[in-house]
Amino acid sequence: MAEDKKLKEDEQIDTAVHEHSHVHEHGRGHEHTHIHTNKKAVLRRLARADGHLQSVMRMIEDNRDCSEVLIQLAAVRSAITNSGKVLLRDHINECVTEAVLHGDTEELEDLNKAIEQL
Image 1 (cartoon, rainbow, N blue to C red):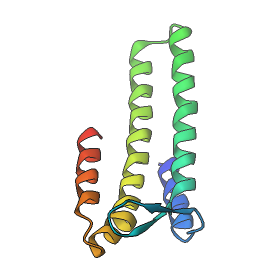
Image 2 (cartoon, one colour; image 1 turned 180 degrees about the vertical axis):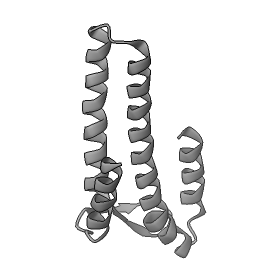
Image 3 (tube, helix red, strand yellow; image 1 turned 135 degrees about the horizontal axis):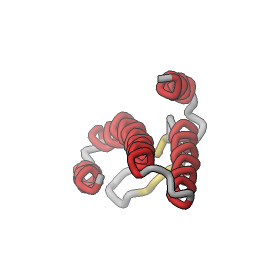
Image 4 (cartoon, rainbow, N blue to C red; image 1 turned 90 degrees about the vertical axis):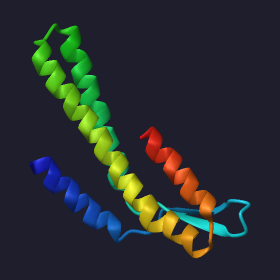
């Protein structure tokens, strides 16, 4: 619960930050400014997930109870999934919205492919 509260605070802070962007030329008739609104929040989440995964690996090396390890693996998976959700939300709100405004249907196709793999 405390982690969820911290992550929500991170998202609120990062939502106001638009300094992490770069420009794409998709060859589709328009340049696309790719804004990473929640870049810092996603990187923090992934760093925590990485640390958590390292901890789970140590649990296995130390022959810890399998049930405990499985619970911790589920937590790592959840952290990674939630990072993907934040990234997906940013992509839809920023990149896909801009693509729709420019009639770029290929961006929607790319999004659908990414969702299938997610």
